[in-house]
Amino acid sequence: MSEVGAYYLEAGEPPGVWFGAAADRLGVSGEVDPEVFVRLLDGVDPTGSFLLGRRFGERSARGFDVTFSAPKSVSLLAAVADESARAEVWAAHDAAVVAVLGWVQRNVQTRFPVHGEVCSVDVAGIAAGVFRQHVSRELDPQLHSHAVIAARVLAPDGRWLSMDARNLMGSQHTVTGLYQAALRAELTRRLGVAWLNPERGLADLAGVDRWVVEAFSTRSVQVSGRLDAKLNRFRDGLDREPTMRERRRLSREAVLDSRRSKSAAEPAATLRAGWRARLDRLGVPAR
Image (cartoon, rainbow, N blue to C red; front, side, top):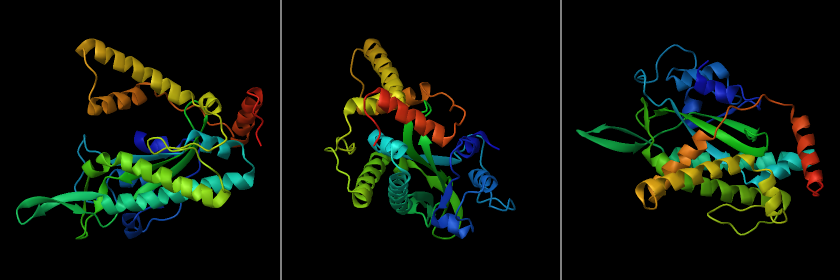
């Protein structure tokens, strides 16, 4: 199994599900089959019989991970709520992810020559494995999904071509904002929750103190500390503030530099019991 595929398939979380018109065209639906998932990332059809388009080169991108991450207060709610409420949070998250992936599919493009000129063209479909996960690398509650879109997309003329990822990469803030808005709408409809005012598109649940959120945000603290160090080195070295583009690059580096391998999976019930105990120690009994 490829290293890329193993991260999503061996994380001790529920199996992924397929999404996309290209996945439908290839006859894959429902639960992700690990072997088929790896084949699609390698640009091979589900049966392993033929290539989908040209063979990938050593430096070819095999897929693109679009990550949807719930606010920490929502992750906490899912972590310590009763089974019925937890199921509603998961369902709200899944519905928001599917809705935004529909937008992504409608806006993904490929490129090919038309009358001698290379044009960007909307695709007829994508194939993505969507993997819902519930725990951060530091074993804090973190409800999120990885939508891994295979680099081979279905062109309008039926060919399998490489995704032109520039539009997708440039729409990351839009994708995040759409997901957050959809999640708030779904949770309000399902559970009647209230929200704090959104800041940069993200809002936490009303009634959850900020210090409680921060107590379960080990990963955010790590990334923030690494980013601060990088920003200070940048200012000292160049005697100026970074541009927005440079700051985004430094932010991505901070995420990667502070990332460690996921810990061995623990039973969900054990993790939830530990999270409830932490809340009790903080003087915030889970309700």
